[in-house]
Amino acid sequence: MTAPGHAVQPSPLLFFETMNAHVRTEALKAAIELDVFTAIGEGSHTPAALAERCKAAERGMRILCDYLVVIGFLLKEGSEYRLTPDSAMFLDRRSPTCIAAAVIFLGDSQLVDKFKNLAGAVRKGGTLQADGTLAPEHPIWVEFAKGMAPLTALPAELMAKLVGADKGEKWKVLDIAASHGTFGITFARKNPQTEIYAVDWANVLELAKANARKAGLDGRYHTIPGSAFEVQFGTGYDIVLLTNILHHFDVPACETLMKRVHAALKPGGRALTLEFVPNEDRVSPPQAAAFPLTMLASTPAGDAYTFAEYDRMFRNAGFAASELHAIPPSIQHVIVSTKA
Image 1 (cartoon, rainbow, N blue to C red):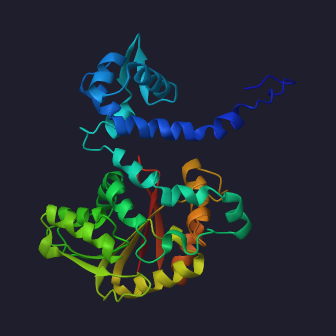
Image 2: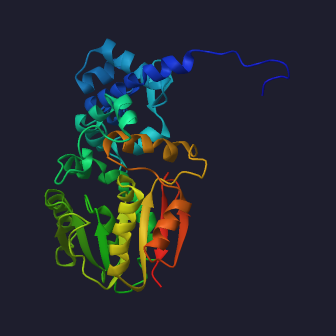
Image 3: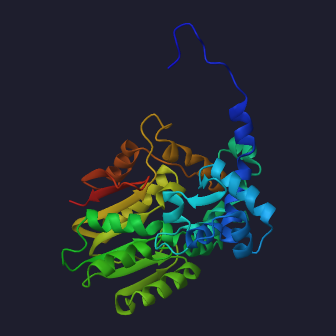
């Protein structure tokens, strides 16, 4: 707290940290490529040991690991490095919750390059690249499905628990924008009576089907290839999953899709929407509030909507009520909307 009468001294530190933020990204990517976190987890703690294990120069390994200490990914004791709890859980490839593969998508030039002329996107009010990532059969969604599946495992478990997927009821579940299939597969794995109908582009569904086969769900996992705005869903669904799809579209498009979802649900059925949901001030919490910038650069009209905005959309689509649920430690929220 600043003492009365003593103003905080202005500093250019934030400017320089932000302009050099790309260095943090590249350092993390290099460490994952070299398998530094797994090597340390296995017992290679010194620059020399890491250099041998990771097939790199000792000087290079020392400088990289010191930098990773500075930005919070490693700990240092004397001349030895240790993993932080976060790095041990999420970046050591031996961990079942490792998300290192997410760099495939998050670092993909098809996504990153959309920020190269952000000022132009701001002037236009949307992506400068036609439909951006929403173009039919866009190859980036195959990369998303390959790289982001580990990151969705925990939210999928939490969503299934939230609605009692393991209670033994016979459910028909529609998984819209199924991607890697993790969400639908998790529901089916929790309940052997659940049938999954997955919607996504045909090229993406190939990966979802492969993952379903690995999970032993061949006979209970069905696919509906094509656009969620055009394909026939069918009817009688108990649950519809909408995981990270609505933020790609403007309000009219979201309402159009939710009307289709409402029609597909049976009475009493529920739509489960997983999204980044900022507070009403739209600048907190920071992760959800920052997300709209990604939509500005990569989509024609996408955004992150507040719960009040989602509730209004869903009511306009015919839903009787919606409830907002936090699912910590995930930074996202689940909105449960019920059909009367």
